[in-house]
Length: 268
Ligand SMILES: Nc1ncnc2c1ncn2[C@@H]1O[C@H](COP(=O)(O)OP(=O)(O)OP(=O)(O)O)[C@@H](O)[C@H]1O
Ligand SMILES: [Mg+2]
Image 1 (cartoon, rainbow, N blue to C red):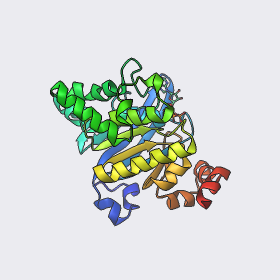
Image 2 (cartoon, helix red, strand yellow):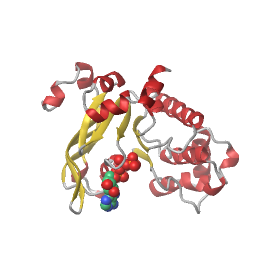
Image 3 (tube, rainbow, N blue to C red):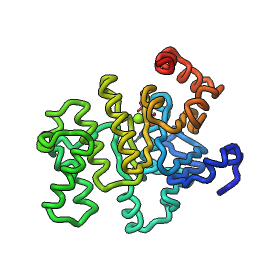
């Protein structure tokens, strides 16, 4: 492990844990605009990391940069100890098989049923008979708490909460070790969002997942996240437990975690 000041400030417990995503010195920009620069981030195996930041700070861009969907200008991204830059196509695919993604927008293909959506990654990465694909897709659909008759529905026939669950089933299609969830509870009512949080927490435990979750939802941060990282000014401005965030003196972090809405959540 390197010995940057950031690392030496960590507890011994954190140093011992396996880092499954390690980002160092990341710079991403579009045209003249720099979105992030010198960003360092570690994600530990088995944790639920909540990722916060003002709208437009680059939470989705960071997620997409880790996934290799947005080019970076500088820095390194290691997943499962492998530098993503140095991979040949076969090794790259092997890593892609080990993560699942729930995107912020366009979570599902509208022309495919739920079952077909869940099967998309399976067809791309697994060599399986149609019968097995059917069984596996139904298993994932049940796993996220959807009833079997949702399988043959199209996204337009589903509620917002059901769409999120179906998208989660697709993210889990390949039995991933890491899932990236970009605002999984946005647009859901508080009860629906709470149920979804419980589902994520249960799946994390039973499947041993590492969860990278972008969220604006203070309830989620409070109830399911083991650790939180805040993005601002193109880098991580604070990270740690909810107590660490409450103790941060960064103005945005203070405003977010000590604001009116935050106080209501903490008081519960
Ligand atoms: N493909 C792109 N080309 C140009 N600019 C982009 C592109 N993708 C994102 N951006 C810009 O990058 C910045 C960060 O966007 P991003 O979507 O990551 O924000 P965010 O933190 O996820 O916001 P929100 O909380 O609203 O989802 C924004 O200014 C956005 O306009
Ligand atoms: Mg976003």
